[in-house]
Image: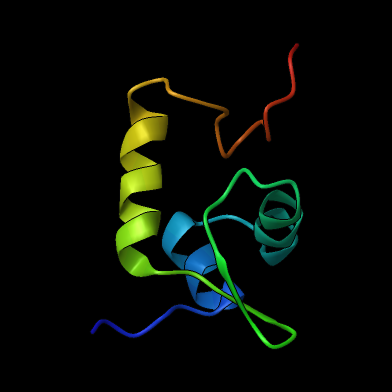
Length: 68
């Protein structure tokens, strides 16, 4: 079993802010698990999510889904 990532580790991998990760897990846009009061992210889920974003399957990390 692969180790789960903290929010800070996921943010570092995505090269985005920790607040973006918290905001998008809360909105259900980023796959995550709750372990008690902590949020953890399965690295395999994060990789699948990244690939879906690269194919245009959802919002971009840079815009947070905002339209211009």
